[in-house]
Image (tube, rainbow, N blue to C red; front, side, top):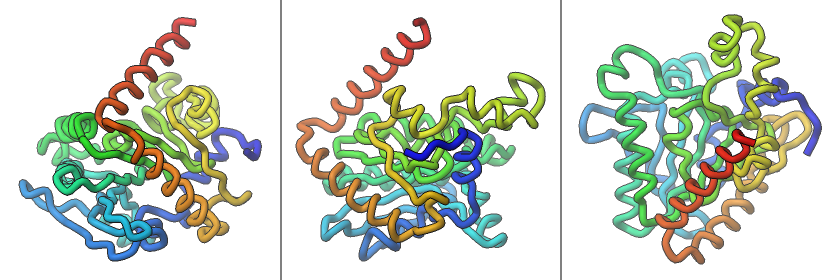
Length: 270
């Protein structure tokens, strides 16, 4: 794994040309059928999800969508989902369970949308319900962190039996700028915060938060997307084969996160 500073990886994770959920779905899956709406309020374009085939196998695919053009980014709230987005994801997960389809999630968000309207519609409750739904789901969940993994907005799609992470992706409780603002009252210290937060793939593998780091080209995923797609394709295939050998995906997830919690608490006390 190439030696880069944490903040360099933050910059690469946010690169405007970095492949997003939409690109991965086009590259890795066939017969994708998008499903929209939460059957309660409306549709949220910041969450892209539906049914697809992965090497001929039916799966449910869900991920945050950022968009690339200015218009797309505004339409998708820059990848920050509203409550209806998370409720749409829950609907798709329950549907996957009903028909016995594995769930594959792509994480790429600065965090959940923080606006007053989102809070009024129950943003915190929607994220909590997503976590509850994933904890109970009786089918396997494979999570891939492809860019930014920010706060509860990311965690709401990340409770997988297996969690994979691209080499230059990040995953943390909040942004480095937010961390620096809270801890030091100075957002300009984001570079220093990045080092302290242990948000890189290498850090999280050492902590046991993720299961595997997937390599990228030297300049990042945007430099050679096809190579990254091949790497992700192989990793997802392996993860699904491993998931098929799990007797109870629900119990497996519960053990995984209980053990992770105990390990992290032990390290903190140590």
